[in-house]
Length: 317
Image 1 (cartoon, one colour):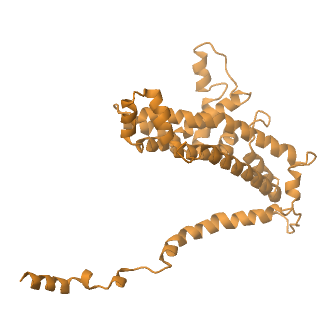
Image 2 (tube, one colour; image 1 turned 90 degrees about the vertical axis):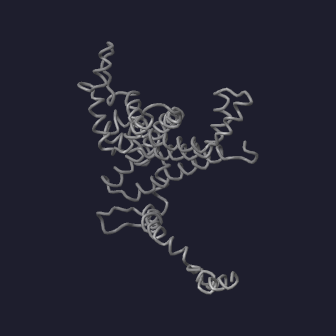
Image 3 (tube, helix red, strand yellow; image 1 turned 180 degrees about the horizontal axis):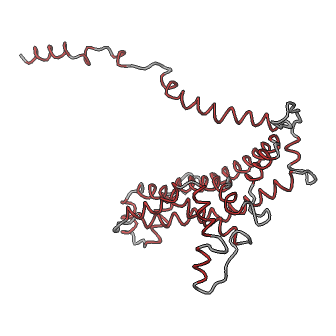
């Protein structure tokens, strides 16, 4: 009776009767079909513009003129020739970019780490505090720029009014140095630290608790657990955050354009601002494109060095 029932179920069970080969509902090209939308977008908006940009950088490209003569590497040579028109503007922009990157990246790496360590603890209103810290990141740069123009105004700005309560004279936040850099770095840290804090928080929650328990059993204090457990567990997160923060800081444009307009003088006129003026105001797209590729090469070198210094070596050291 049991054998008969088993035989009957076997005959009516399509999963058993179906040949093994019929379970495959995909062909060899199925994965490529799933990749096709991404490849189409990558080709359209990244690869083709990148190749076309190299072509443009090899020409005296003025899109208002019909003729765009081929000049080879002259645009690149001009960037290294002190007597050329583009040399002082470009390298002044690179200097401003380097100052902002060096000044802002340590704050954008360390402050979010401290905030993430605090938010990783259990305390009342933790979710509300997380939302408040991340909230500025959702604002657009236009909103942040207008907001800080009013806050930093030397005549009726709220920050100078607050400092006046302690007898501190008004500060020209956007008219004098180094206060212009202090203002730009401060507003950028306030605006973007929430993103890095969320990434750190995700990394902290991925560290096994038993590692902390084992370290505590061995007598490790809070600082020793941070050095020997937390930091190694966040190694990959640190590589990601440092790399993306350096790239984002090196591409700073909106803050300086909206708040200081590149001033005082040209001290906060970053490389992206120089490229924008060269290409969209002076209509020298070939020269502007050459600048952008030189900046991209510099950032690629910095990223490679970052990976080499912070990569996880054999043996976990």
